[in-house]
Amino acid sequence: MLKKLLLVALSSIFAVALVIIGLLFWSSGEAFRGATFNKEEWAANGECEANTDDSCSQQRQRCPRGAMVQDLRQNFLHNRETSKSEVAELIGEHDTIVVVGGEQCEAHYLGMCSAMSLDGDSLYVCYDQNDTIDRSGYIRH
Image (cartoon, rainbow, N blue to C red; front, top):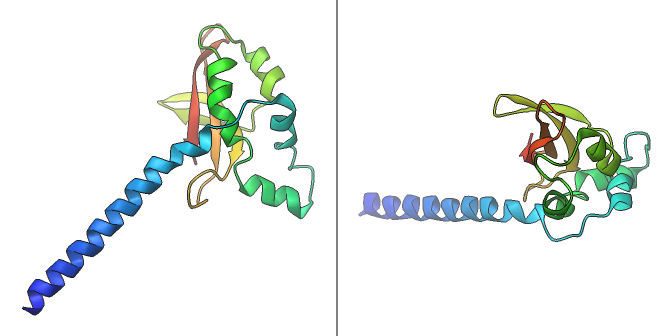
C-alpha cells in the first residue's frame, strides 16, 4: 500500500514538473513578439554599458528589446537583401559573436528574456559572402 501511494505521488510530481517545463518552453517565444520595432527605443535600451545608473542595469536585466524582434525580423531584416551596413545603421554595432550552426554570427543583446530570467538572450544575424543577411533569429546564452 505504501509503495503504491509513493508511486502515485512520484507520478503526480513528475507530471506537474512536465507541465511546468512545457509551459515555460511554450511561453519563452512570447518575449520575442508583440511590439513594433522602433529604432530610437532599440538604441536607448542598448546604451547601458556606459551608464552606471541602477535603473539602466535593471532595464538590461529585463527584455526591453525582445518584444521588437519579430517585427524587426519580418519587416526590416530581409534574407539575401539587407546588407551588414544597413543592419548596423538600423540596430547598431553588434555586442559579440556567437556560433550558430557552426557559423559565426553577430549578436545584439536583448536582455534576460526567458520566463525565469536565468539567461541572457541575443538577436543573431548571420551574413553570406556578399555581406547580406543569410539568416537571423534569437539565441539564449
